[in-house]
Length: 605
Image (cartoon, rainbow, N blue to C red; front, side, top):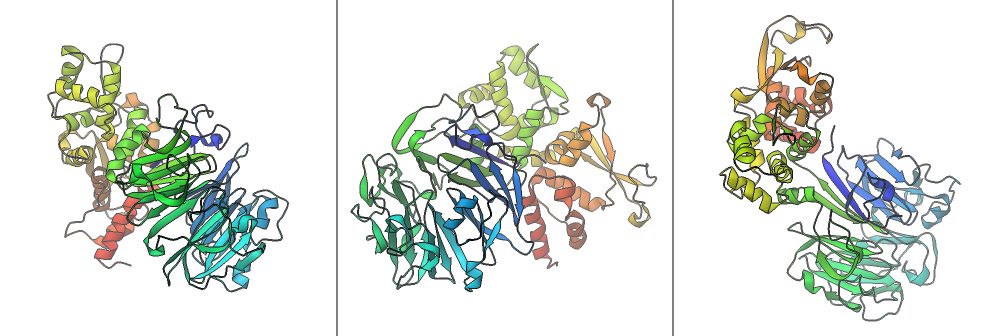
């Protein structure tokens, strides 16, 4: 199964650089992570040291640490992860049952109510039994530096850990075990941030916004630099108006539900050109609607509803591939995203931003993995059936794909681009990026290529690749492969994949490159075949009906499962329920969503 997502990071060379693919040489530029992304990354958090925790599956976690192999953890089968938070050398895991679990270095367990810690380091996930013993259901939790905050039973606030600067809101008390934070009103939401010594929360009735903790740089936004050891109201804001507020050791950023962005605290980190002691609207983002916020010790990132990424702080990485610009940005600067992200931002796929102590992450999961599948097909050059280019610089390609995208024959493409007015290899590669995955990496070069091919530029309809591939499904003349399906009584077919089966077969025509791009099963099959053998058919041994297999093949082209009136929905759902795993499809989320729609439509269990 190939990746259905991309994860990039930028930051200091000595922090989490073990997650990169090329011996850490590219940091602090945006660098692709080596974490395997065959499942959706639901959340990634990292502590203050070089390690991070990744949540992929409902009750499973992966832990990455410098100079150590990856560790895997699994919670009990009846527990489902709801959220992860981290700070320094401690991670907290909240499950849907309202229970809290901890993963930490042994000398850091004192930050959370786990007093019987072993001497081992990150050996196991351990339950935090305090809340269960006190019959407290934990709704949400956040962490600051050496401290934890817990919203319990819907509206009760507890805090534990270090209380320097009064950041637990407990006055002069130290929270060796979680203690209730005295607030007369019902707490509705809690906020903190990486390595922060400050804490924020909001109440529902009355509608108030509170803070407590360190305020050396004015990061509490209360108009002074006095530390607050008990909860103090931040004026000029209603709690119900806030989307989120996050703080670090030096500054805080507040986002309203309308997407307005405010900052306070130290210069370089608060988004203004000078320090602010009150939350002040950041001018550079005044016309933007911000929907995500990530804060690290050194830098701040925000993502707008138009998928524009802004960053400011120390050592801001402005360019994904060019030489790193060592620039300290006092105010938000729009950054150029890693090239492959640019195209997919248009399709509103799932984007996440995150920051560790000194490292920032940018993560994109592809809802429609057709584009990603074809990108990897271009990179692998598997079973290409023709070449384009000049002598000595030919590039292997897939004929049917080029012809469906351009509506020209391969001979016409070769003549116009490499005989009449030859283009160079760089321009050819720019053209192929558009052919295979709709990316316009170099606007000027691609426009020149379109002009040579006498095509309209830019393409008049967004996502032309998906439409072209869906149209290609109807083009039986260009299909170069067949799947043979036994249509005899399925119960009479023995389960023996080693012998050729006798019987009546029906053919499902398909493009070989589609099978290669979309299915790990077929890729593995073709890997074991010599390309010179020119294999053009395969017999199906799954014992599935031809109706189900035809629907699956059509899904490879269209990303949609559609039934006709004469097809049995229960049979289709039952037979395709294992398709993601068996055929090793990348787009598990979309495929299962399509099956769920059918279940709901026909009221299937």
